[in-house]
Image (cartoon, rainbow, N blue to C red; front, side, top):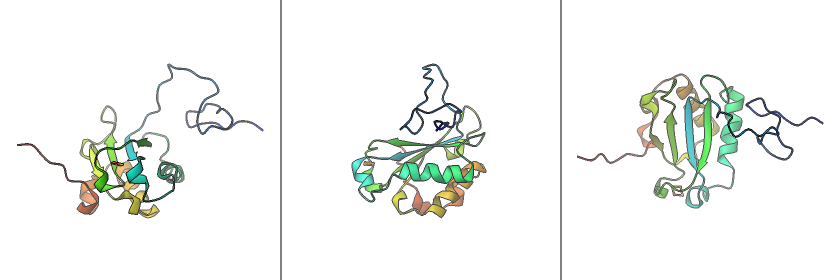
Length: 148
Ligand code: FES
């Protein structure tokens, strides 16, 4: 049986999700428009025992947003020091290309409570280049202290 092919079009080492058979340290990373960095540390993840990032990647695949110009990338992070807002998710945009500055540095809270349709809505808003804070309830966001 042939090995699977990752999203960069490279053959994957058996038993891995995306590790390429043909290792090339100079290969560029894949373009993304939006990057969601979801906390995978102890206090944020104790609210559930599912792998949130894999779940979100599956949704993105189903929506066709795992590749292409409006690709949304999901990464796991360690503790942000904001555990009281768990499960914390930081959204950034690739402002070097087609990312939207107004969706950059957006902190979302209690994302462990989000259902699949909530994530689908967030992904749709990002891919359509709408402004998250205009489209969603303000209670979804972590306020940031602004210095005088
Ligand atoms: S464990 Fe997620 S912010 Fe601390």
